[in-house]
Image 1 (cartoon, rainbow, N blue to C red):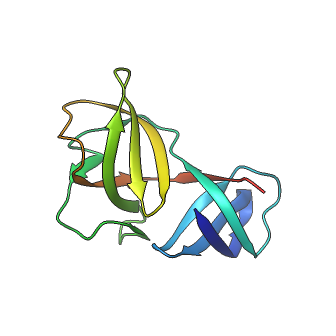
Image 2: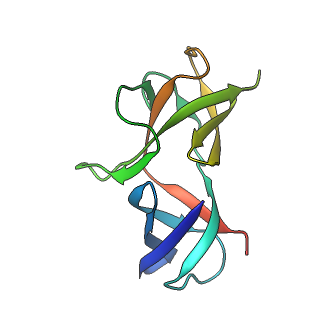
Length: 123
């Protein structure tokens, strides 16, 4: 995913803009600079269906911070492996994470609700 780092805070927390919206992330790749990057987004916690991940009627391909400070990502539920390794498609990018719980059908729009996402540049 292509992002623009707009602001950097302590502990490598970056505020960024992308074609999908604005949010914040923990930068996992040295010292970030305020510039454009191609990044991989990671979610380190195992997410629970119907708690952290829900079916949604919201438009897909969004990323933003809600009023409670949580990062919300909407996209298409693309696949899941037997061990819970899940792929969410947001635009032409994918986000992978582990899940547990009752799984909806593949191909549905879903919404992730997470405390923090992590970013690594692939420059």
